[in-house]
Structure formats: structure tokens, C-alpha cells
Length: 130
Image 1 (tube, rainbow, N blue to C red):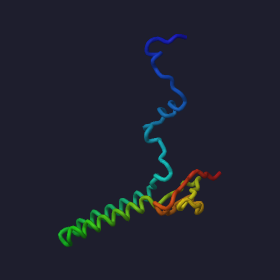
Image 2 (spheres, one colour):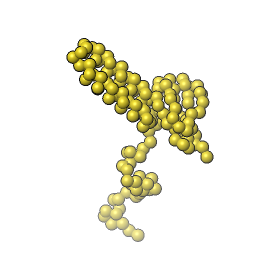
Image 3 (tube, helix red, strand yellow):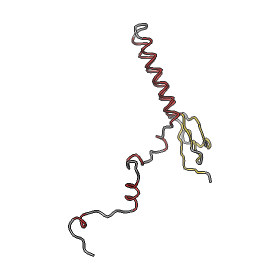
Image 4 (cartoon, helix red, strand yellow):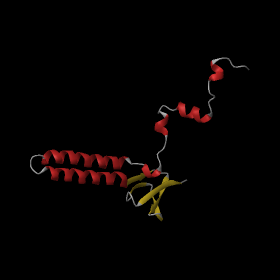
């Protein structure tokens, strides 16, 4: 079989490319983030609550207290929200998370909801229950 013109120039598809283009979701959204970057929906919801508290509190405190105190309030509220954003984790029903604190094994967590200290603790998920 001989190829002419465009057929010869077209790259051949392998199985990975077929799988990549068969999905309805764009390929860059299918890439899984590393385990230590994963953010749970519960953590996102709690961060959103803290964000609303910062905005509403800043509006309520406006012209009642000095601007420095408002900035301090908003900063502390957003830092607490960010802490909970990265602390609250959820393991799927079929997985368990290995918890390492400062590199030392601290146990298995999950399935379900659990709490991690963001900088000191790492979560490695790769264990699936059968």
C-alpha cells in the first residue's frame, strides 16, 4: 500500500492518543495532580466560607475601626481559610492514604474524611482495598 500526499504526512496514532482524544473532557484536565497538591471539595467549601467571612467582616468593620485592624482581620481570616483548604482531605471509598509526618510513618487514613497538618504531613495514596 502506498501513501500519497497528506496520508504520508499524517502522524500515526497510538493507543494513548486514541484514549486521549476519545474523552469529552480536554486532555489537560484529565492529568492527575500529584498527591500532595490534591485539594478536597470540603476544604474548598471551608475556604470559601472563610473568604466570605473576610469580605463581610471587612465591609462591616469599615469606618468603625482603623484600616490596619481590618487588614489584620482579613489576613488572619484568609490564612485560616488557606490552612483548612490544604488540611482537610477525603480518601475515596476504595483507597487508603499513607500518612507521613516529617518523613516518618504515622499510619493509614481513610476511606473518608481526615485532617492533615499542611507543611509537616504528607499524604501518599496508592493503596486500594479489594
